Amino acid sequence: MVKKVALITGAGQGIGKGIALQLSADGFLVALAGRHLDKVNEVATEINNKGGQAIGIQCDVHKKEDVEKAIQSAVLEFGQLDVYINNAGIAIVDPVEDISEKDASSLLEINVLGSLYGIQAVAKQFKKQRTPGKIINASSIAGYEGFPMLSVYSATKFAIRGLTQAAAKELAKDKITVNSYCPGIVLTPMWDEIDDKMTKLDGREKGSALNDAINSIALGRGEQPEDVANLVSFLSSEKANYITGQSIIVDGGIQFS
Ligand code: NAD
Image (tube, rainbow, N blue to C red; front, side, top):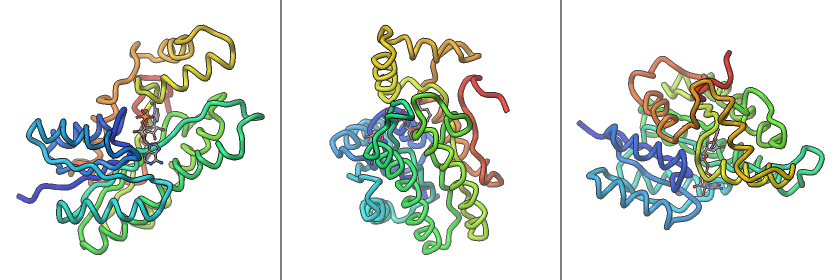
């Protein structure tokens, strides 16, 4: 049987790396795209050493041509593409009154436009292949409720839910599904940066913002990349064929809808 192929953006660390390892374990051939080629290559080597098949691709998602080239490279290497994970993203902590135009633009360009470019380019590829396809985007619990000091970040994650719904409705006729995952407090370098900036802003001890956030989780522990990867594994599988337009919370019990 022909193996399915997944491309994951921001796969050099954190949640993206967790998804790459999980999808490879599920039997996917994986293309790992990221800003830093050395980091995605490191993850690709780890996967190849375990008997999987992975390649690293340099790609800055806020450049449309990089995203298109990454898709072409994956197809050139593996022959097709079946699943596209729009995982790359940044978080910037600042009070809403102070966040700079430059930082706000970076958040919108990387988190929203980067995902839009991925949806556009991969939808074109799926249609060219005349195969069904799955697009999976990174939203957040901050895509359901605005978080203080994360105003523009929250706005980008709300935007991802909108993009997900609209793209799902438009692309359904081509058997392309579009869904999102909404993690909570995941213990990745992103949260180290959030904690660092938040505690500096309010003069508290380093680690206390993260601790407070973890204390709000019903299941009583911080989230691991594997917790997110398990949901993405399901959404990437045939078992999720009848699910589209959804943004699914995986947060250990912080938000309840
Ligand atoms: P992270 O900062 O640990 O990793 C993000 C990865 O994306 C890095 O490898 C980084 O190099 C890459 N990246 C950033 N900008 C890029 C660009 N322009 N082009 C290509 N790659 C780029 O973050 P993470 O915690 O692993 O988060 C992954 C995704 O999940 C993000 O979209 C984030 O917003 C979302 N998320 C994270 C959390 C959390 O608690 N960590 C919660 C909810 C949602």
